[in-house]
Picture (tube, helix red, strand yellow):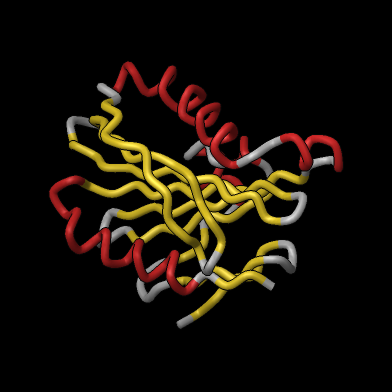
Length: 157
């Protein structure tokens, strides 16, 4: 499996059939707002995975925790997504390559297509990493298997 290294801190798997989007394509998905990162897409499976990175100063890194950042991320996502029928499903914790992640799952409608999404934040040293997963709800079982492989095979340097 191919991999991508982000800022020499994290090695991300690039599952078969996925390709990294260029900066212009990433901008179309509004992903670059969470700092430097990468966006992977599999057109056949209708999956998008994005990882953003935001450096923190020492004081902020000391004061912030993943739970607080995840709550704020939820607010930031919820407001613009209401027009797409945003429905929060649940709050969830998991691990990305052994690091604790805090996030939530939700559903929405895009171009009359029911969608499923998961969003997480990981605080790693003095950096926040944002992980987002988007898939067609009709293909959810297959898509979640790919997503599980992704977060299981993520490695921290």
